[in-house]
Amino acid sequence: MRFSILSYLLKVLLFLYVSPPFNFIQTSIDSIPLHFHTPNISYTLDYGRIIQKSPSLVLKPKTPQDISLLLQSISSIDNNLTVAARGAGHSTHGQAHAPDGIIVDMTELPRAITVGKTKVGCDGNDHFFVDADGGALWIEILEETLKHGLTPPSWTDYLYLTVGGTLSVGGIGGQTFKYGPQIANVFEMDVVTGRGELMTCSEVKNPDLFYAVLGGLGQFGIITRARIALEVAPKMVKWIKLFYDDFNRFTRDQEHLMSMEKVDYVEGFIKLNEDSHSSSHVTSRLSLDVENHSKRMVENYAIEIAIYYNEDEAIHQKLDEILSRLSFIPPEILNVDISYLDFLNRVRLEEQKLHNQGLWEVPHPWLDLFVPRSHINQFKDLLLQTISTTPIGGPLIIYPVLKHKWNQKMSIILPQDQVGEDIFYVVNLLRSVAPSCRTYGSSCLQIFLAQNQEIIEISTSKASICRRNTEVDIITDTIDGTLGTMMAIDGVMGATMMDIYGGFCMRKMEGREVEMMDGGDGMGVKQYMPYLMDESGWRGHFGEEWERFEELKSKFDPLHVLSPGQRIFKRKIKGGCIL
Image (tube, rainbow, N blue to C red; front, side):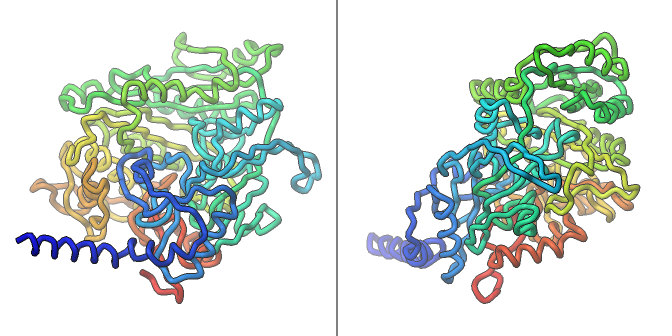
């Protein structure tokens, strides 16, 4: 008996030795003159804590040349290795994972943040800039530039994200309507392409790479340096919150605020139930009585405004002028004067509180969408109807931006609007789930994810879509068998993608009838930081831009080495075969 057990164990070890990734580690990796690290559990997760995938190795680069050497070596030898750059790990669906591949930890690059001045564009005028390495955090950039009385103009709400991370997806927040997204405020970048070439790019130098990388989801290269535009920094911020009970007035005032030169930041919030004036980021209660919950489904709205100023300015006169042109509910106005640094870093306090409560490292089934202005009312009704039977679980943010502030040569895809309007809306449903949802098979996480997917299916599709007529059914079927191929949590915290995302177009779920809805021409909604299951889904997302995106991929990453967690392209080996 002992001999048979020993024989069995030897066979298992032999199988592991000759199977990927072990075989690759024993052969190909030895030819790359770099020092690799064994991944710890933090490299298998991201902020979403929905998908867990482990890389084989981690590279902690000391220079951009280390990254270049890695990718050059992979391109020159036969292997099936993939590479993903990881910054702060703030993706929500494993987009920065490299299953059985190599993670490049960008935060290990030496910090290099310098402020300077250069001539940019046709005007020949001098412009201030900050050069920052791809792994630098935006909070570090803010602290350094403020020493010079300067600041980047466009921000995300949370500052503990890396430069390379936000520039790969877009970088949006309450200032986007005025200054454009962060990707519209970049002068120049150094990028290591999938071929391993270290290239400097800008609007005039290697512009095809420049535009491809900005908003390009990490598909074309790894950003090792970015030159970002700066403006003179204000010292203070007047931060105001106004309340509304009508959605049309709420959106109309936000659009009106965008036209006011004195306003620097606008974000709107939809408040539901007992949280009508709260901004809690976490729900601690996920099992509510559906009937009582539905009775409390009362909509209220709030707009946050920021006006930048210096101490000697007549800020109250500015504020009175702005408020006189709005239709909020008087006298409900909250306002505070706060330093510019503290305003931009306002989410940090909430993060620290959640850390202390053990509520930060929980699953975050976020939903981020771009919605055409012409469909924002219809979309709001869809969203609220879909989530009406469960707690909201976090902030529901909705605010307008201007399409002309985005350079559409870049890779990011904006919403489709047949009437050609310049305004579209950003909608963020930033849900968190309670610690009780961490265990495998727990239904509350699956419910949130299923609701997200239903919203996506209906708002982005042009075909007939089936919709649930049950309250919180858990879906366990697939449409075509491909959705169940990847484990959402690998048995740690959730269910399979088949459990979560499949079955929306089945005629029955769990033995109950569902209702078929005609999607018509669709709403033209697009996902921001999209997570799609395969190439066909991505083709639908990119639409007419897919061919260009594919051509750029072939040019800069022909073996499809980079960013496999996005699930856009399948890895190729030398000779062009798909694995």
